[in-house]
Image (cartoon, rainbow, N blue to C red):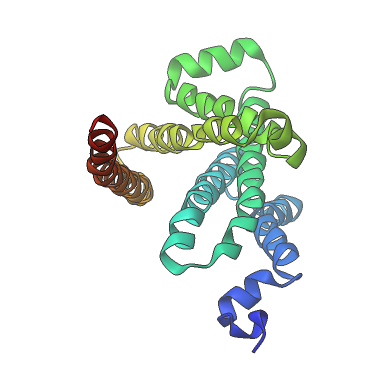
Length: 231
């Protein structure tokens, strides 16, 4: 039996050529839906807010999906999931950039003075801008060429910023909803993020424990070797 036939059907599906174009189209659907609603003049009574909230929500949802790739890969053994992470991450930046541009253009008319006044009135915007700034180096270094230039270790260290992005993005969402006394949905997103980051902390702790146990197991053997050499 060949290797491909021995794989489970989800892994065979994830290895298929069609999966990336399919995921690309799925990630693009919220934008297409928003575009269609705008084209057909169906964005509701407050079109600016509809665009801002939709793009912001999808940036956050895709960010959580991106952060879920590694836990899912470890829990299921589906290593093929890793090939989709970069695409999810770039779509996070795409929607976050749309979210920011919609706020700057539709609400503030691309006026710096108006944007500053809006930030003074709604300081939670600063948290969102911080998340976007943190995401920018991650998007710019997402290519294979940048991985080679930075080196795998430095690239991985840099891309751990995504954990901070997750925390700041959820805080931005929660703070924005707090003014309307409606923090139910941000709490759900915060709990999902806590689980995803908590799993990473648990695995890191387990790995550290295993390393310590391994080192303790080696020391007695080293000590015996030294005793023999002294004898």
